[in-house]
Amino acid sequence: MKFRYWIVILLLLGCACLLWAGAAPRKEDVRHFKAVVEQTYHHDPSAYTQGLFFVGDVLYESVGQYGSSAMRKVDLASGRVLQNAPMEPYFFGEGACLYRGRIYQLTWRENTCFVYNPLTLQVLGQLFLPTEGWGIATNGEDMIVSDGSSTLYFLDPETFQERRRVTVTNAGRELPYLNELEYIQGKIWANVYGTEHLVIIDPSDGRVTATVDCRNLLPARYAQGVDVLNGIAYHPQQDAIYITGKLWPQLYRISLQEKTR
Image 1 (cartoon, rainbow, N blue to C red):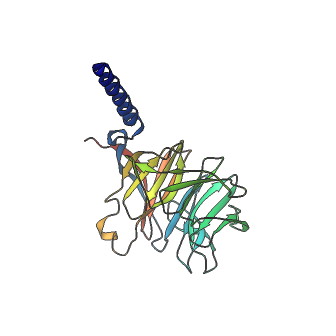
Image 2: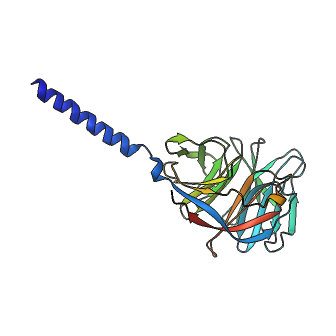
Image 3: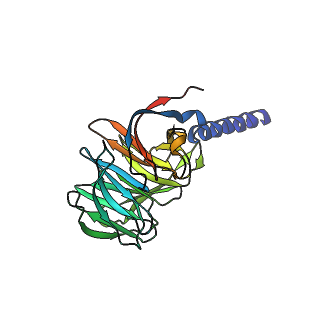
């Protein structure tokens, strides 16, 4: 009887271990890529980039800092600002995206999201944001918002009421400092503030499925006086990804090269 008892115990422990192993993300489940520059463009070195996205072939950029925050239209080829809509000096502009023909731009600590006409950059209205605003993207149904923590909030686009949230984890550990966001082919891409890496996130459970190493993109001769990597824009017609950083004088179209270990 004792022998049978221990057999049962061992079987139960074995099943528990299998269940735990299946539930816990493993490091080898996360793919690792390196960003490869395909084309380089001029970028306004005074732009404290917070949000970056395309409407057709026109690049839009949200820039931050108190006293210089704005929503902009930018000529991709030259980096020239085509249109600039400055914010009041007591607002700090953050992430931005397009949803159903309107631009949504977050503010950092002012609990406000501005809604714009993309043609004129005229403010059409405001929404109350219950958290700090860092990054925003949309899957076509929800607004996906980051607040600098490891949490992503899925909000109703009309009311900004929370529908659900996920905690982002990388190899089983919470990943904080999620910043600018972009929704690309069913995944959420995010800058991790203060690092030179992007992460690609499964929106269903918050699990990081891939990382993108963006180190050494900006030549050393341009590195003095710049701030962190920030800004991801996806051009769906080109199936192309563009990235830049705060105060960077260059913007890049990149491809991904998988790392072998």
